[in-house]
Length: 188
Image (tube, rainbow, N blue to C red; front, top):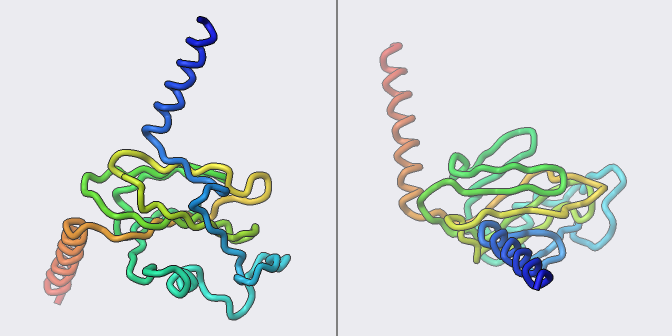
């Protein structure tokens, strides 16, 4: 009976953990790796991708169907900060081999891809299909990236924001433009 109770408690803890986070890690079936030059050869020792190698976003636009129609909703650059059209609505804590990304907004959006990049280790980035992720319900939990050899340099979420989010973003830009115009008019 005592063994059964222990198994039940452990099962409930695991089930409870799964309810608040989607785990993302290399080796899961929705993963694709990119080996820098795209030729299957190891990356040069200096860590560069070499001349003529397209930027990641360009490669994705050319090789992932529909990627060019997506927006960079959120990007977390380790040591440099956050960007993207929904940056103010995300909270992230990213360490060397993992981290957690949470969404604090109330408006839904359609996330499609998660990009996790190192830049030095092979493969230099991982791409995950997160089209089934519900950001209003669960966080993304990243784990086991380049253990013992590298570190995450940035993560980015690509997708399509809802029209209401785009409208609020547009109104914010309009307000900034009007404010600047008024200030420049006052200085003249």
